[in-house]
Length: 124
Image (cartoon, rainbow, N blue to C red; front, side, top):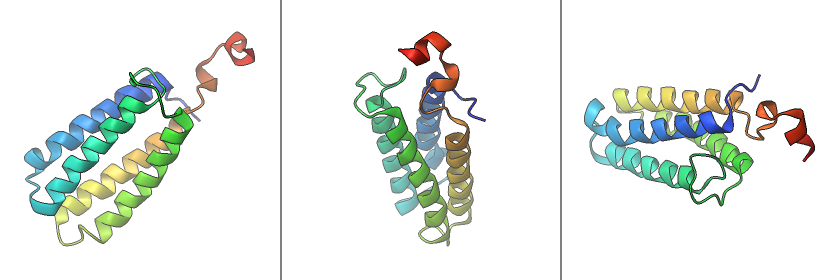
């Protein structure tokens, strides 16, 4: 069931960006792990700002493409947790959980917005 609207997904994206920007300081990430986390925050912020939904002021990237990118990133983060960050228990756990949350969010988001439109809006 797709119960997260595009508007609410935008809010979630902004919360994800805030989490990523604060994670290195909060969890004590250093080196490559901290750099990767800050870079991911920047990329996710850019994706959020460029997406065609309420949270995106520039509106270039269609929301379904945004969803596809998040799906790929969710899988990649879990894989990276077991490869690049395998020697850092906190980093590994963070990225397994974060990747899983991204995939769960992807699973329940209405990227087409059809479940949150009126019948009249769907016919336009």
